[in-house]
Image (cartoon, rainbow over all chains, first blue to last red; front, top):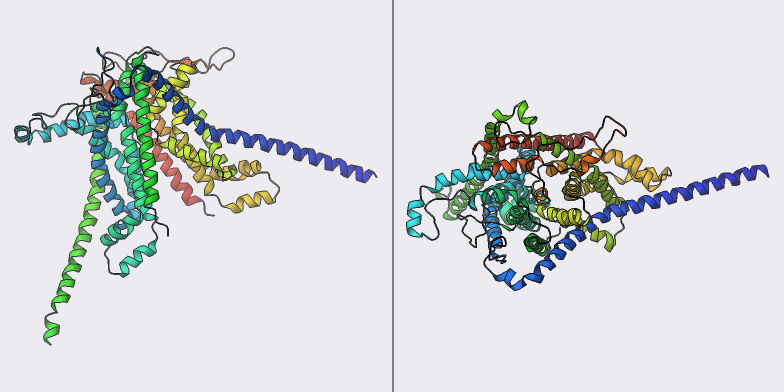
Length: 326
Length: 312
């Protein structure tokens, strides 16, 4: 009798212990879920703020004017609210950056993945990673004070010839603020990103494919270009897209070195403002909250987010389209 | 006889094409090596030139002076203290939140639409331009929550910015731990949380630390989102000290203080027309690069050490 009561009391203690433990587990589960959900909340908050402030903006300015007018001067009188000059600046700097980063990054990735020895790879990869970690404001400094003077010097040789040939396209002198310098620096900045993601994609291609290609008598280069590159193209295209969205969203390099003057041009020798640079320019001033000038930066920000979202969606479909499964 | 002396034209053609292809192979190997060398050497040369320009300004006075309109008297005292305090807030928010989210996604989440939604969100947030986080901070923390242009707002913003990095590295760290460890813990009667807290997290902590350091080094160089919330560029005072001489000794007033950070101070000096301030900018840039390189280097070193040390 006593024995069994001892046992039952032990049992109740165990059950209450288990109940309290289950309760604690549930509480932890909920806390962890909330932490995971904070990402969703961040996205919701970003979209909420951008759309909210942009709605105020579009109550005053028609979407048609915003998308088609070629004059962006919200801080002047009379103001102009056409986003096209900022988009042109963003597209131009991004294209210059890609012009540098895609060839460099791809060649570097092919070399590191297919040609380089393991030892070289072990040395190069951490260096690339370190360089990718340099703050962008420092890259802006490089663009303004080292690369642009260098380009000005280089440009001074063909300039007389070019400017007599096509005076509209080629100015006599390269301006201190231009899109070429920051574009090139931006390209150098995203090269490590593109090369490291592409290299990972290429190294994920099974060795058997390479062996098959070698057995058919192909050289390393032929194997790399005709077998490995197409097989990894899904991952490589993802790297390009990531590079594009990084270049589109890059702020400090262009804010420092491209000038802050909105300018509807696709000529990289001109100075221009990008969407991001405009947001920085407005934030540096002291604009009263709730004014239409203040809301322009949210409209610009919404354009930027939609731009990068578009990139991501295209990237998603590209990588699905070119996915090869082994 | 004649056939062995002069090879048939077919064979010659094949030999020619083979040697041509081998030449192409060799050429590409050289081009590839040159590409990598040129790209890294250009960047290293830029860093070196910056360091050479800024080095003479790196005196004790530079670290202990407030910004000034005289370039020789200007320093980065308020900037580096601001950076340190903002990093403190960022780490205090991003580390628990990011690690918890990573644990949830890796150890708890079932495969359903909700966890898929969270995962898509993490990837998407990693691709959102940093200045958009600045707009979020301006509209949400500053206008709606009335947190002001303060260290707290800045820390929160940067914490959200690096959250995806912390989550992704936490997940990778957890995934690298073999399931036998989890099964062994369960077999001894551990609950799921006991299994994670006592057995999995200690093994994963090294890799998680790597991710946290990389995230923080990204946050410390981030300029754009802090400009949008209105971090001032000319701050000639320090935030109230977190430790007070009188009761209750710990003060949280500094969270509400206006601030500046190192990259913004550098941006301010770069945009000045006077060339003397470029030297100050170079000096600030050298400090900034030194800090990020040290943090990243430490993270890379940690990763190599942990990779070598653990054999499952």
